[in-house]
Length: 362
Image 1 (cartoon, rainbow, N blue to C red):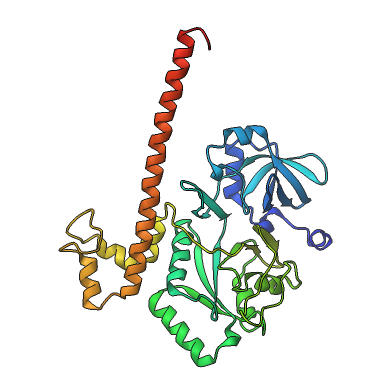
Image 2 (cartoon, helix red, strand yellow):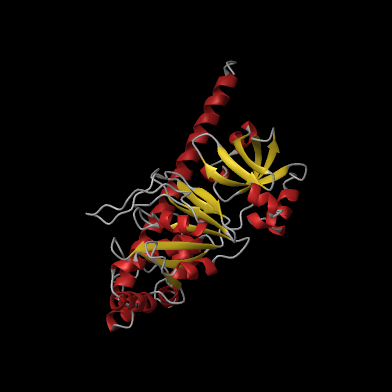
């Protein structure tokens, strides 16, 4: 914290602004300090502000009032805190979020928050691993749905020729319109200056991608030292492994970055808006379909299918759109089913309590 003290950091350097201050006052937290959640553990958090870092736990009231996992603090959140001493604090409440990136979790009806209050998401793929345009679109859907700008970071470009790289870049530009692309190599430092220039003071960026694509190595390069432990790349797999199992925030001289564990699956939750945003052309065509509930599969009069058959719409892009929409639809149906089960269970509990009261046992 010596360097931070010398710079006389302000909350604005950590991303705090009038939006969060207004939220703090409206929630009645004006008498408490604020801090930003930089790491999340099993039963505690690490929170940072201009005075230092604190190990923090949430209050019993916050725990009791939480209706779902999304009501708990997450990495990136601004929280109202009661500082107990120079090392410990209690989280009183979570301030309103500007943006949120989430995905369907392994639990059937639940979502998992990846990060909050993000300005841009660096979606990282390595040219030598499971590189896929479909995967880019999958990430973009959840990013755009959360109100966050997606940016492509194509890593390990030192492993392919310039000609091969240009072919990949042309394919990305043809399929994914108006998306910024940064080609880098954490091994040779190629493109790192462009990545650094992209990061602005007071703004927050998260790195998303599968294991082995080099997210942690890139963050180490940006920070200027090995803040995330990485192992040597295996000769047989070209995969770099790191020991990070949770999300964590790092502060650069300019801007803030969040490292995320590699994600094998990026399940669609209630991401309809994000899907329609990233597939804007298809969404626009869908509005002209003959039937309101058209599935855009084999229905007569479907504008989307007609354009695909004409060759004017990339068939792979269309198939990916259909798959993502189907996932989002299934998730929504699951949620509706759960709400109905919860409603029925609530009625059962109420009836049981009323019966107990009637019999003088409650």
